[in-house]
Length: 458
Ligand SMILES: *Cc1c(COP(=O)(O)O)cnc(C)c1O
Figure 1 (spheres, rainbow, N blue to C red):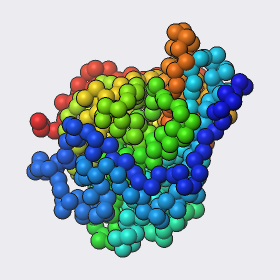
Figure 2: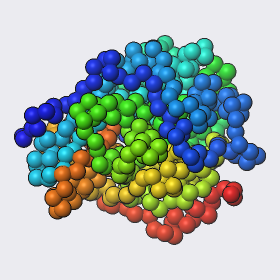
Figure 3: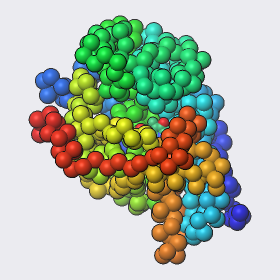
Figure 4: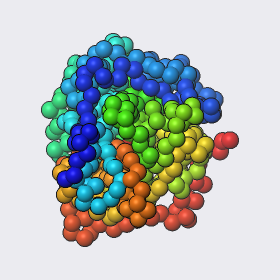
């Protein structure tokens, strides 16, 4: 491994170099993201409309398009110290294997038990629920990273945590479920008999394996039918992206410390929280006209919200009960093929990122899952870390950019977000290794069908 004498393998910040504020990129946007709309009246939603479902302070953060810096409460900063700062790693071994002149860095968020960046927002959301004197929070989880992160945060603060877990995941990922129960969460397979919506779905589709949309509807109902509970969500919302800005702020501080300026910043995109968090301070500089970067979102070819979606108002959930958001969407009735196992299966995208993409501040590409797992395996073998399939979308794009640099001889600096580890995704790796993984790309006809069901709004 050839190491530059002045750049360590891992760049860490000291405790007092850690960010004290989250950065709200909306403050620097000339074109603000469109407001959330009430699904029944079509009117913009304000504080009073949202506070029955979400915690008060989180509603304020959700609606705040103007405050640039929002202080991170001391209790959250203390919790962050348990697993942050996360390292910014120079991928010297990967560079050498690729024989590329590019310099590759990754910000690794997998160093906590939840195995992903989701803990950054889970602790913030649990903290504000606790501050408000609530008993607990409800949520849904699919793959399980979010449910695990939230369970950890709730255990730390002494809050009750009710997780509705999509039934097929509940059965296929018993270990995820047990991690959540270790942290004291109650985990219910969804659809369940506990809620009106769950009973209705079970009556209509007996034996269904469940879906994320259905689990969301159950979690929202459970929260709204008990005044001591609120619903919390691990991605898509602006508040989540705000909390995740800790990733980008730390990354930028670490790069600045060594005088490194990235040329290209890459993140995988499901609902947009890690990407939005990683790019936040860099995007801020770009929006203020101080510096330019190439920013690339990477999504699965089987669920291509940015690259093939419409920029339109749509439901955030399949049950069509949540607010309408203006975003790049494949339509809330779109469900990626069951053969897709690489995560990032949400039909829409955070509305801030959608606006930024629409205004030309970032690029997006889509990649097929076999290419993603090829990159995942290559990365595991060169850098040692077993990456989450979601994160591996970013790895794929980083490797492709580095190979492009090899052709052109340019020593560009690439930073990508390595959002988590893949220990609970070995069934997907197994399929890949057995040659049983296939690529799935939805046809235009399929997408048209789901676009046709978009709500009729400007
Ligand atoms: C949830 C998750 C993602 C995708 O969510 P975003 O909100 O788009 O960041 C990516 N990587 C990992 C490891 C995750 O758990």
